[in-house]
Length: 369
Ligand SMILES: [Mn+2]
Image (cartoon, rainbow, N blue to C red; front, side):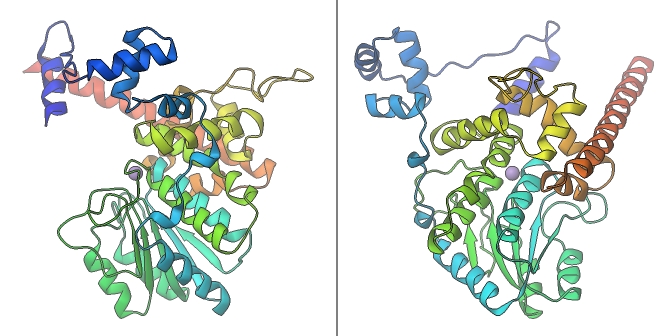
């Protein structure tokens, strides 16, 4: 509500100035001792304090993120049940359907879990609901589709925490659900095999701010850990988590900081075909130097993910269907990725034109009254 009020305030103000709300409760003693220990200006110490950094060890983790800082995925409630059910599906050769939302977080989550499982299991499909026909979250249509192709297990990503009725519908059809979500739960939790969501009150996972794709990453990490798969299988997909963190605007602290750091590192050294083709369509080209420091002509930062990559991945879901975004993100074929990237870039231009025209019309209507 406060955010909405601030927004309205900014809109109403002739100068569009913003109302800044300052934190009042910085613990001056800990800021002082932290600043002294790190030999930094107390102002910087205060900024760190507001990001949850108040000890030397926390500061070290903040500035030098390490993959070892990632939490054990099995600390998440129901993770063991989720992993067992996936292993059971693999042993029995059941069809698995990976289901996710049509925005950036949803499509990166689906791409991550699908690519990961596909790397050792073939009987798997993905499904993205249509924004206009099916709307947000798990849809009855999606479950009907899963039934029609003989899926026995659905993994919902970035959605599902409130889908009590949908999961009940699936249960009646003998389709099991694993839910990976990061939204706040409602009064009742769906009757799924496993519900992975660190925002559940009875989940003791130490970090609540994962993106939807981040929860998918934890599931992949757990499956890899339990089945002793090489780490590379999951860390190769960490770039998708960085994209989701940027687009979903989750705070880049704690575990998200590690994921964002290594995700960006991957994008800057060895980007996937899909990410590469999207950046090219945004005018950020691969470097032609012999031994370049970065893969592209510039270092890719979180801002590039937010402003160049995010809107393009989103445009597919807004103008057509987000299925193509997933096809692009999972593509192992350079030529196909180039083609899809160019198509999606075109959709983004259409989306921009629509935005501009709607704004113009709205302003004209306001001026008339
Ligand atoms: Mn999300």
